[in-house]
Each structure stands twice: as C-alpha cells, then as structure tokens.
Image (cartoon, rainbow, N blue to C red):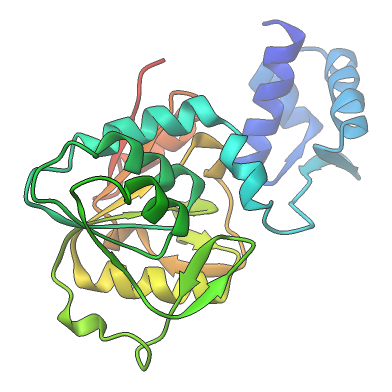
Length: 254
C-alpha cells in the first residue's frame, strides 16, 4: 500500500471509530510502528488527526458548515454523478421536492426535459435553473437565508398539509448508521423533517465525505429514508453496515 493510500485509510477508519490505539492501527494496516508514526506525524501536521495518549483521534469539524459557494465547487464531479442518478428515479408527471443543498441543486440540470413535472423547492438556485423550463415550480414561502440561498419556513407561513409529494430529494451534512442524517442549521432541519414526513419516498443525495459524521441537528433516522445515493469513494465499512438496515444504499461506479 502506498503512503497516500495508507494515510487515507487511517482517516477513513478514524471517521468511523473516532479514536484508535496505535496497536489497532498497525494490525489493521499491517505496517510497523515506525511507518505508522510517520503517517500520523504527517496527518497531524495537516490537521486531520490529533495525537492522544496511546493512540490518535479524528479532528472533528470545529467551524461548522462551509459556505454554499465552497460546497458548490467541492467534489463537483461526484455531486453531478449523484444528481444524474437521482434524475433516473424521476418520472414524467411526478411531483417532487428538491432540497437546498449543493448536491440536490445539480438534479435540476438533469430534469429539464421531463414532462408534466412539478418541482417544490426551497432552493433559489434550483428555481433559477428551472425558470425557463416547462416544469411547474412551487417555492415554499418563508425567511430567506442569504448565505444558503434558501427559504426556511414554518407551518404558520406555509400550508404544508396541501402538498402531495411523491419523491423528496434531501441533502445532509452528516450520515451515520446510529443517528441517521443530520445538518448544521435548525431552520433547514425543520423544513427537511416536514418534507420527509409528507413525501412517499425519501432519497438522500450525499457525497461520500458526509458518511461517519453526526453534526449539530438530527433530521431523521435511517428507518425513515428509502434510498441513500453516493459516490464510489465511500468506505467499504459503511457499505457493510448499511446491509444491516432497511435503507437502500446506492453506490455509483467510478
């Protein structure tokens, strides 16, 4: 195994286990303690892991959510591939919800030729992307989050009960087997919770970097999610864990 591959593996293991002893890592990677220490030293300097007595731990994100502008270009190829796959589940005549994430935004690019499609969204970029198409557009009313280019709403501002959504495409900042999907903002989380409650089928579109993270606000357990669609870079440990759930994990080929 090359050093870069080994270092990536260390980070992936720690994303799942959070803390590991040095002896565990040497066995897992089949390397000497000296080789492991060199990898740890480099990863520590990069700010990815932190040394503790007898072992190492993952460095949790300290500054919360990155900006929408950053997320729009981060892992773009993977997000486009995920979005294209999501579009295959959207049929002519559907009524769908598209969430206000950087991955779910990409879905709008692949559905413009769908017939008699209704799109409900809280994403201003999704509205702008579909504005000149024949798609029926409904934007939920509420408060504008300028940084996220989204609308967050509440029951007293929007009559959710009148919506009949067949498929909801939701984004997430964190996905774990134990806690399900999570996000950083409570207002966004409230809207997502409501859309999950109202929709017949729930699709979570998330790139592989979101796995193993449980961030600020819980949105829904995996038992409420029908499909999770992600890219080929996902750690195989997560693939095995998902087999024990009722959620369909769809991993795209490279």
